[in-house]
Each structure stands twice: as C-alpha cells, then as structure tokens.
Image (tube, rainbow, N blue to C red; front, side, top):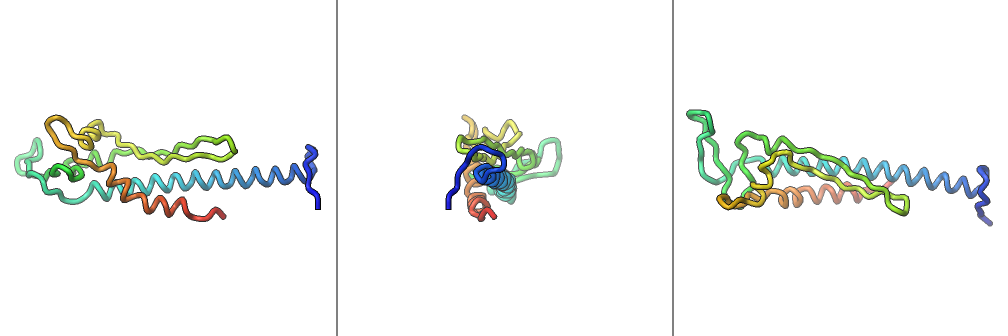
Amino acid sequence: MKLWADGKATSAGSAIRAAIKEQVADINRKVLSRGVRAVNAIRNAELEVLKGQRSGRVYRKPFTKRARYTASAPGEPPARRTGNLRMHWNGQVKSENTSNGGVAIAAELESQERYAPFLENGTPKMKPRPFVERIKEKAAPEIKKIYSEPYR
C-alpha cells in the first residue's frame, strides 16, 4: 500500500493532514479544559489551607468591643480575621502555542490582596506565615490526576 501527498484537496495526503489537524485541535481543547480544572484544584487547596483555627495570640478585632480572634503563630498559614485573603484570588489558564502545533498550559492562581506577600515572606517586625507551598503540596496530587487522564 502506498500513501502520498500531492497537494490536491481531494488527495489521501490532504485528508490525513486534515484528520491530524482536527485531532491536534481536539487534544488542545482538552488540555485547556484540564487547565481550568487544575486552577479549580489549586483554589480548593487554597481554601483548605487558609481555613481552621490557629494557635497564636488572641487579639480583639479592630473596631469592636468584645469580638476576638486567634492569630496565626509564626510558621502557620495566616489566620482568618476578615476573610479577604481567603476570598480574593483570581485564577487563569494561560496557553501558548508551541512550534510543533501543540499547546503549553500554565494554570495560575493569584492573590489580589496586597498584604499576601508580607504574610508569606514576613516583614522586619513579623515572622513569615507561609501558605503558598502548602497550597501547592495539597493541590499537586489532584493536578497530577487531572493531567494523567487519557485523551479519548
């Protein structure tokens, strides 16, 4: 059996090229969809890491007389006082076409709170309250599972 491409629209070669192009487009759509699922997995991990009680000092909530909250101790993820850090995140999937016709995907989740880096890295007056690596560790198994699924 011989297969050849002669450039004509009705040839076997152009039919094969069209089928391959459609398969590549279908896989690229599936990869992009998995990127969205990966962002959701990171978001779910973020919600898990930033919830719960902490073991630091007990403070009075600002502008209240009786309400109190327990802050995080150094090394713990930040405690929730207002909930802004936990709720203000933007997720996005960035895709870039590669030279071989494929697509490279980056799933990102970014905090919109200006004080998030200060909590993560600390300041001269405050020790770090790291949470980024814990989010990554918590999300990694789910993300690996998402990207390991077969492309059907």
